[in-house]
Image 1 (tube, rainbow, N blue to C red):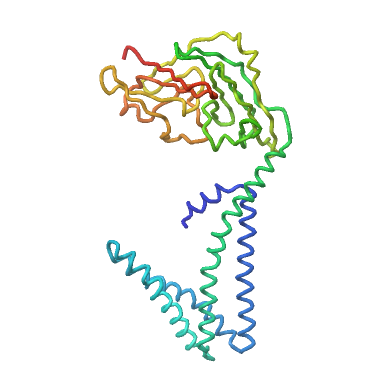
Image 2: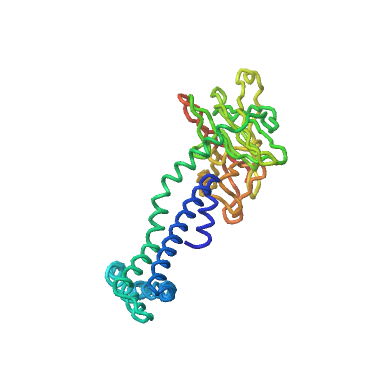
Length: 357
């Protein structure tokens, strides 16, 4: 495991998960220390304490020689024969090398180690190498389940507080003859850090990070909503941490009855050579961009492939959206917006085309 892989594993863990892994690692380390101390006391009683220490130190070069005997020839062989040799050597040459070199090292000690003592030290050393990874593998499932339950409990019991975000006025847009949408932005004050956003479906809350949510996107700590007229916006439960690290939560609902009389304005796309300007932020999954490959024929692509500097957390297409490779791609000639209202309403889309290029 290289450094970047280890760092990625740590970053992916929740705080309860890190605590549980720390406990497991400490228990494994304590078991290894107990085994070594028990061995040392036994060999001290036999007058072979110094020899035991040398045997344990020699286990490292023995391990290196054993690994070299298996890996180096396999790397010099091409094709499937390399894999065949590796497994054959792993179960034949490796045990012979490991136990044989321990027997040789024991014979060189003064006083000499018996065959049984050499075998026992080789076996316990092998256990130190094999058992911890096996235990860590077996612990992954239970630790994930328990840490997830602890994390969920922490979010569920977070203190209720007024939502710190400023709710900007709801806007209504007409997307040609295709349909209409409502939009709203929730702007966060300094010091607020969003931890999680849940949406309600029936009697259950579910984490939006594990599902598609075309009605919601996030840019930094600000939230931007967009949903079809006539389709209710599901209630949201927002969890955030204050500047002092306190976890708080609040529900956010929109009263659709107050929006019926809201006048609609035209949804207009402003075209630039290097990108587009939408009148309001929209979720990246909603937007598809088109380039003209033949006169009158556009080829559309979704935005699931991130550009340099983009990430999956900040998933809004904001005003000033720019294509990093616009000089190679050419100017954007079309935009398709796809909306998926709450069933039984059908999905729909609106297309905007650039004119006068």
